[in-house]
Image (tube, rainbow, N blue to C red):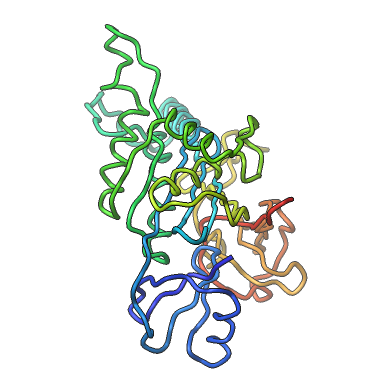
Length: 337
């Protein structure tokens, strides 16, 4: 496990060992901070050497889980397994149904617009690929990354059928948008699925069939192979996983779908809870480090950072000490022999 390092201008340098980072912090040479759940240090003095090695990021996209690996020739710095954003399509449908229902009632609502040529990406497709791009942006800020090696997934298309071909498939359009945006961060190298398998077999690595398993061999083995194809390496030296899940915030849902007693519809949604931004990490004297959920009756709910399970719904504002803003939940899983 290595610790990312940035200079006084927030520019990424080569990662260092935990023991060296500890000495830097103790002597005042560096200041510790967390970047999206990853422990980092910022140098308070000019670095003795600013030369960097070639670092690549391997990306293994998936429909449910995805893998990211940050690697150089000598070391594997980070393995990330994320949960794909899959709820946007259903949320858009619910919003459409609620909007239709409001128009049939005596409720203030905007006038229905005629069909317009939307163009671009559909909301669900864009959310999926924006999530990948957001992870890459975060990694770029703490590691001196030069290249992103991506497995080029393909949609099943049908010849002579205009409604579903390479021009109109959401997956094809979405990934092309992702590649264009990713090129703004660094060089992009594409590998086909069969090439990833050949590289994995050449190194004698195994991939399990259970795609939702929280182990290195589920997705990160492919992302490691992709990064290794650029910088080199034969044996994974670090199989520790960082699991990342994006928090789902109901930003503009005005109320619950069904009315309760006396036809009253309770408020639902928003990104604020009694002054706190939802998802923010706080310290509570009883529940420890948690994140902020919803609020009710002048109380807020607290959730576990590891599982997302609600721990309580009656926490007082004055008992919660704000630590940092947050939009994801993360937890490390050590290598299992």
